[in-house]
Image 1 (cartoon, rainbow, N blue to C red):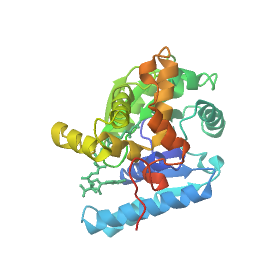
Image 2: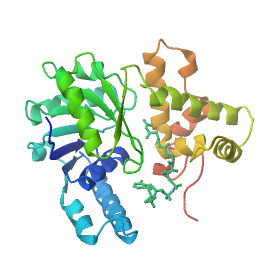
Image 3: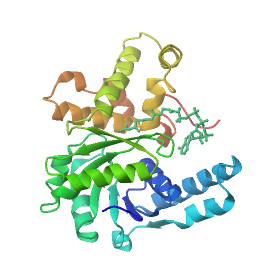
Image 4: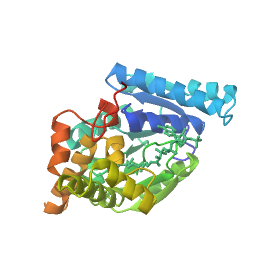
Length: 288
Ligand code: CAA
């Protein structure tokens, strides 16, 4: 399991693209897989743009940037990555979608390939139950956005994850320049158990008229040294993702009503206002 050289990343959204870029910058070959070709094109543009920025900032030579780009492959077919020695699922935060993908991953990759998931809240043991016989190779490897910048990988073992899988995950995370920190397999783990209720409370404060979004964000930035205010961060993460994580915690933590998503958050999602990725959310990002 050690000496990983080829990572398959399934899902070319924000997180998958970031994981792929981070892998290539660490010298790993990385195949990015998505059923939607336009997502792969967006990922490729993101990679080209970020690598050019690193060259412009003299953090990489143009040869190093070309080498990193040459390590990245983009495909709609999982079978194109059958020689991968590690797999990370970074698809949409939906338990049924992820379970189906895990079955495809088990069948596509070698028998000792670790099947990691970048889920931000779904139970690892539950996902592992979809791949009978391979449960010991399933683990949570939760990255943070923007992946090339954020240092953490939250590492979550399922009930049947083997020690070898856990040790290899710690080793790979460090090899990608990250700091792995363990958390137990509860809905939302640590990061979202703490972050999402705070974001949700910011929506309640807005909804109750405590302050407008700009003031809420300024107060948390200036008074609590947050790099982004909670409502700006919600747009950055994706309002649909925030709502979905709250629902995973509501369902997974005894239907405690404190985890129900705020109605304003739900209304924005239902209106298609998902944050940065849709051009508007709490704030409007459309260019004049
Ligand atoms: N990809 C790669 N690099 C990026 C990037 C991206 N998408 N966005 C920013 N960067 C880099 C920039 O190139 C810049 O690099 P240098 O320092 O080398 O110049 C650096 O990050 C800082 O960027 P900026 O100067 O443009 O802007 P900033 O100083 O305002 O920082 C930020 C931007 C890093 C996003 C900062 O605002 C921040 O840390 N925000 C909070 C992010 C956060 O909380 N993320 C976790 C979200 S929760 C999650 O991901 C998990 C989940 O389950 C929901």
